[in-house]
Image (cartoon, rainbow, N blue to C red; front, side, top):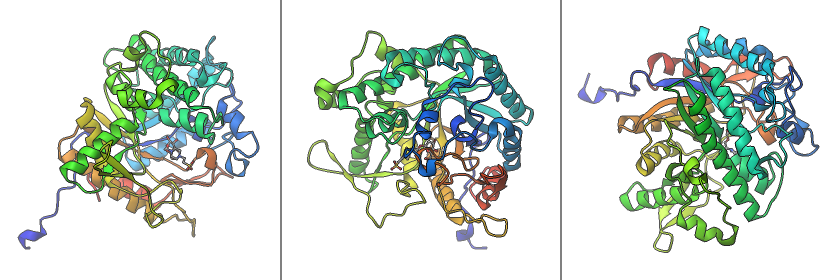
Length: 451
Ligand code: GBH
């Protein structure tokens, strides 16, 4: 063999955590069982015209009953980690007040089942299903406090067995998409000042949640959050474009991850918002900036940026009709975003540890002769994970990866029309079937190397 035949080492560090992710409302179903209180997404999905086909999460993947099957899917992949979320309204049906023991019992069963299979649960406290009984929802500051009380209570119940908690999932989505764009629950289109206040309550909930979890969890419990920061990718990888993209990422996320990592709202945000800037009470920013044990990133579509001579020093390049996309119109393919997400967060804020809390894609997934050969999803994952390998090889502290998603599920406003799973779900029968991408992921996990 010639020297040129030496293959690139595509292995990941020993102990790198491979996993899959899901979220309560998207998989559980059992919407009216065991004392679960209604959520904003129950209300929204039952409002005609809000979700594709009038789909709801009433049944979803029926994981409330089939959680042991889900564990088997995970063991079939050989993964040792599972990112799941807790439905707040199963624990506090009205968002606060008296806890519902049946809800706690359910998650005890789920977690014990995972642990018995050698799988570590990574638990998200809030993945968008807000108890409907909370007055004013995220428009009310009290909701941030109610969240912290709930998160602290749950951490106290679970931290003997759960080592990693994430407070919130994608603050931008449950604030902006729900309250400004109106495409997610509660479906509002508020003015800018009100939206900024909702965002503030979102980051405040995270910060108070961190404090509450630390106060009640076992010592050594790792606390972080899962953010889908808008990641800007330097379209040309030279220092001036790299600097431009970094500045763009910091500024575009000023009201979310930047505020959380820096414990303040940066000047460019406050200046741009002027009189619409959020009302901040004493102590809020310190809570929001509570130190984290890890930062987890949900990585999907890139935003390309170039350096530009005019202020602010960068220009965002709009997506083109010819840019490649997956089955969701928003899901532009740009694998480098995975590398730049990790590198940019690391350079800006030096977190001790990072995870990819979600990455994956929708695909057509034709079911033919009992098989789903989703070669396009394999292509997507191989390229994104390849860029994560690059980040790890350069020494950035990335410690794990959660593929979105373990199985097809309720894709929010798209209902069941978009499939993100590496297991196919028949929503009539509830049956799960591994896709080709599951077989591919199993090989990757077994080798701890890109295949
Ligand atoms: C994540 O959001 C969520 O955490 C997860 O629950 C979800 O299932 C997964 O991604 C896949 O979407 O159709 O133009 O209105 C990723 C961020 C925010 C991207 C909402 C899609 C809707 C765009 N998502 N957005 S549009």
